[in-house]
Amino acid sequence: MAPKRNEQSAQGALQPAHSVKPVFERFRPEEATFFGNMILRSSYCEKCDLTFMSNPGEYGSHPSHACSDGQRYLVVRIEPYRFFQHGGLVNCWATYYFGKTKYKTELNYTGPADLDSGSEHWNLDNAEIATLCLLVKAMEENIIPLRRKILSDAMQTNNAEFLAAALKCQLIVYTSINRDLLDFLLLAPELRYSKSREAFVKTSMGFVTKKYPVTQERRLQIAAFIKSVKYLAYEHGIQIRWVSVEPSTKTKAARAAFAEGPQPVPKTLSGLVNAYGNPGSSYDPHGDELFLGVDTAERTVDEDLLEGDSFEDVDDDGRAERLSVDLTFYHYPNWVRPSDP
Figure 1 (cartoon, rainbow, N blue to C red):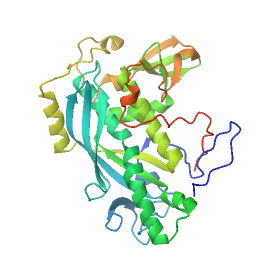
Figure 2 (figure 1 turned 90 degrees about the vertical axis):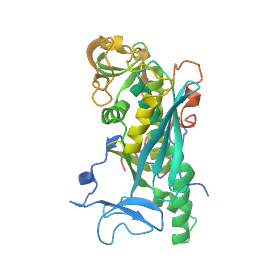
Figure 3 (figure 1 turned 30 degrees about the vertical axis):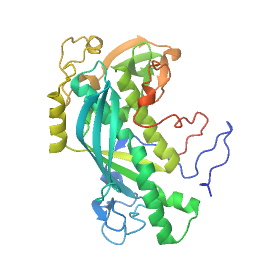
Figure 4 (figure 1 turned 135 degrees about the horizontal axis):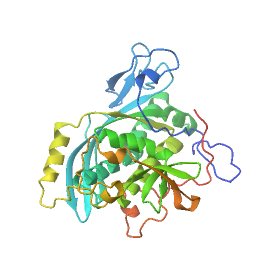
């Protein structure tokens, strides 16, 4: 039995009844309740082999794991442990810690990104963005089926509508990706992409007021990131919120090893420095002006602007096909966006 879907929209498309509005924001525990102060702490469930946020007392118990605000907070930590360059790609191998069992809730995926004109750190960041997109694959291939079976066995039901509602959760992602880059990824859905400027832009009253130049590959990885977050919300009722953590010793060692590898990439952003009027500047991964944007006052036209998650006008060189996840089915042009949950 397929999950229940809402009434058909005027455009003729249907959307899952359990869809929620996608969010692009950091996790703030103090805002995670409708009932005043709620203490949340990370808690590993041996029966699920998953980690949840829970509050003390009767709430957060197996198998529901719903807190006093009615929400479930599933936790995952992403740890990159190897970067390597091969065949024109920069790859990031990462472990996704949902639980403690290898190949079940402790998963490994490789996020690929095309080598572009950016710096060494820029290219490594592209590959790390790809690992964030792979959360879709981790959830669909492993975690959602696992939770569905646990709930089905515990509740002794195969009712698709009930299980779809019970699988809805907040996914709390701990990531060591550059904090400034994460802030930009969470801002990107509010921006448009300007084809002529090759930049994400902020617009107001027909003018571009700020631009964030990007390489072609960075643009694609950002588009894939936006689509991935939207997809989990629309298709599975899963909203993602983010927590920045310091890179682990393993991650730091992986970045250092890549820098000392046999095929180093440029230390400067040769493809972007002209856009910032600062030729020869080195890329500081923890405070670069790229994430601040460039103030401007340039007229623009609608034909030049695309949505931030658009793959339109991508160079036909196979880049979109080599993204970390298949996003060809993530397009819902006729969907009515769900209202706030």
